[in-house]
Length: 287
Image 1: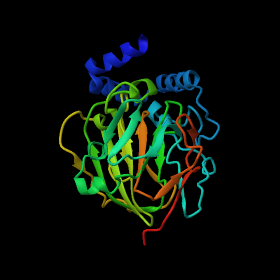
Image 2: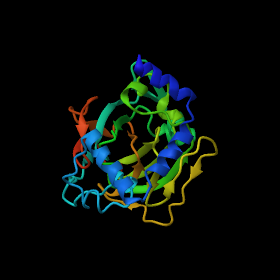
Image 3: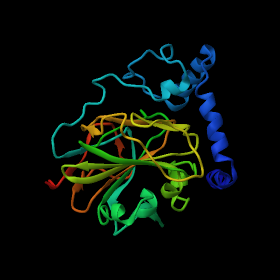
């Protein structure tokens, strides 16, 4: 009953206003306030801070700085085999399967199309027809930086304005087309195995998305799709390189083309992942 109420409220609540308020709260610099927020958050969500690079809470100027915390350099070893795909995030698998023609599974009885997700022309979306996808949910307690699952060249990145529904399991199971409705950042890559896409999906209370190419991108419900200027940072990425981070939590979707990969047999709904661990194997080289 409470779950249904929460989902229903999301249709009428001022999602962007609430998210803007959280954005401001997370950036309070008053020492006692931000320390209180950090300590209460760690206690409430049982956050593992053993691998955090800086001292908690003293070395963090704001709660958001803690939320997007860096880890020690050896905390997330990246599998370096040339053919492997690694997890881009710490999180929990929502789904990982084949794309059926242009349709991606969201939850039982719910799906959405490649064209709607990517918000692009048919030619770009067609690269992933009958391909593979993996959807990974980042809970509040997770490390929230996103890393490259493969080496490659970033060809384009687009910010797509939209809604800010929660992306927790209950909401994903009930809101039709949630991932194509919510705001998102679509990154398209060229790899030696073919095209790949990494999509950052925004959510309720996600104050913004940041990348090395764009800086911080604040949420907005309406407007045109924004093509990011990639000229300010190298577009060549190695496996495990930083792609960006969520300022509060959300979901990442990975797309690969037909016949390109074989997901690990353990990559099932509910599987927990860490950055750098193997989630699949590339099956061919496009060169």
